[in-house]
Length: 143
Image (tube, rainbow, N blue to C red; front, side, top):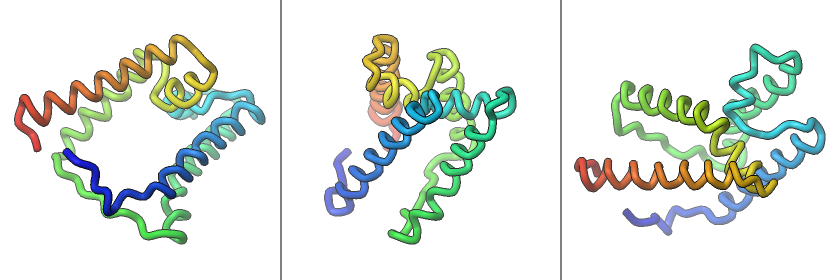
């Protein structure tokens, strides 16, 4: 596997990362909440403070449409069946529940707060992802 340097967008990637960081900082400073997507979505219907959660999720869903005014949207290609994506999504949700948070909550917000629990969780997320890709592509015989 190699990086497609001809289509790598350093500026857009850097700007996106900075916007994620800015959004996380604004949410914790202005609302006292961690920008962990699994926690935000998981409490959409059970929280009395649901309005900001809905605004956050709607913003996530609408942001690609805003982005397309500045740059064309990338082509999305699905290489696997819907069943594979459903199982993978279920496993990610289960892992987020077992890990008491997701990559955004632990990796972005937890690490920036120097949380040891988030460091361990992020290392487990990343290690599991690396192992899964290696097994799927090299041992089972994927791409």
